[in-house]
Amino acid sequence: MKVMRLADSSNTPRLVEAILPDPIPGPGQVVVRVSAAGITPTELEWYPTTHDAAGGPRTGAVPSHEFAGTVAALGPDVHDFTLGQAVFGMNDWFAQGALAELCVTEPSSIAPAPITLTPTQAASVPIGALTAWQGLFEHGHLHPGDRVLVHGAAGAVGHFVVQIAHLHGAHVIATASAANFSLVRQLGADEIIDYHSRRFEDVVQQPVDIVFDTVGGDTLLRSLPLVKTGRFAVTIAADKESSEDPRVQHAFFIVKPSQRQLMEIAALIDTGKLRTCVAGVVPFTRAEEAYTGRVAYRTGHGKLIVAVSPAAVI
Ligand SMILES: NC(=O)c1ccc[n+]([C@@H]2O[C@H](COP(=O)([O-])OP(=O)(O)OC[C@H]3O[C@@H](n4cnc5c(N)ncnc54)[C@H](OP(=O)(O)O)[C@@H]3O)[C@@H](O)[C@H]2O)c1
Image (cartoon, rainbow, N blue to C red; front, side):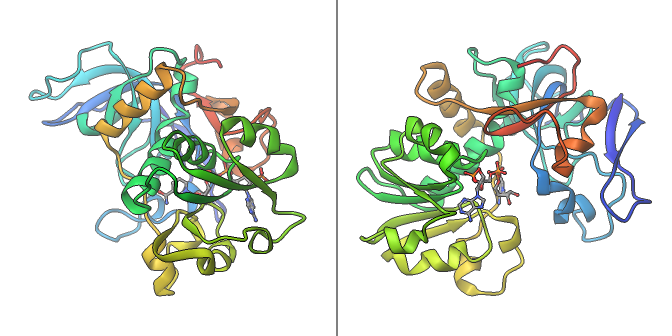
C-alpha cells in the first residue's frame, strides 16, 4: 500500500511517499480502506509520532489518526462490521495512521459513517467532535443552562464545542476573530468576543461553569479566575501537555476513541442538528503542505482533509 510517512533524516518534519506491505488484521482488528484523512497540524511533533509506546524513538511514523473509508478486512473474531461498509473513526496514536491506502483500527474506535456526509466531510468529524464531546461531558460535566466559555470557537475542535454546548442548552460565550463571527453565531454562540481587540476577561462579567480552551499560551491561565468554584476548566492545547502547573495538568486531556459517542455524533449529523466544516482538501501527494501551514487549499473553516483516494472530493 502507498503511505505518506515521516522522513526521519530531516531535522524539520517532512513527509515522503513510501510503499509498505498491506496490513493483515489480527484478532480484534479491522482494516479500513481510507478514502480521506483528517489533519491535526501539530501532530508531527506529538510524543506518539516521535516515540513508540514503550518510550523508545519512533521512526517512519504514518500520521493522521482520523479517517473515513470502507471496511477492507476483518479480524477473525470481528462480527459487528461487514466488508465494504462505510465507516469513520480514529485509531491508536502509536499505530500507523491514515495517510495510507489501508489503516488498522479496532471496532470500538469506529462507527458507521454518517449517511448524509461525503467521505471527505466524514473524515473531518472524529477528532474534533469526540474532543468536544469528551471535554464538555466527561471533563466539564456540562448541564443545561451552564455558561460555557469556548476559546478558538471557529477552529476544527471549537466549532463542535460551540454546537454541542448550544444543543445541550448552554449559554455559549465564544472567542474568535471578527471574520469568523458570522459562522460562530450560526453555530449557536450567544456572545462572541474578538480576541484581537478585547481581553476576554474584561468582557466576561459573570463567572462561567466551563472554560474550554483550544488555544494554549496564557489563554487558559487568564481564564481560570472566571470559573465558578467547583466547576471546570478543560484544555486540549498541545503546548499544555507537558506543563507542570497542577491547574493545567488537571485541565488537560487527550481525546480517546469511542464507538458509542461516534454513533451519537453521526445521529446528530444525520438529523441536521450538528454540522462539520471542511477547510479544504489536499491531494495525497501534497499531504505535507497540510501540516506546514503553506497549504494553498484552505478555502473555509474547520479541518484540512487529505484525499487519500483520488475520488475523495468535498
Ligand atoms: N488534546 C487533544 O486531544 C487534542 C485534540 C484535537 C486537537 N488538539 C489541539 O488543540 C488545538 C486546536 O486544534 P484545532 O484543530 O481546533 O485547531 P484550528 O482548527 O487550527 O483552530 C484554532 C483556532 O484557534 C483560534 N485562535 C488562535 N489564537 C486565539 C486566541 N488567542 N484566542 C482565541 N482563539 C484563538 C483561531 O481562531 P480564529 O480563526 O477565529 O482567529 C482558530 O480558529 C491544537 O493545539 C491541537 O493540536 C488536541
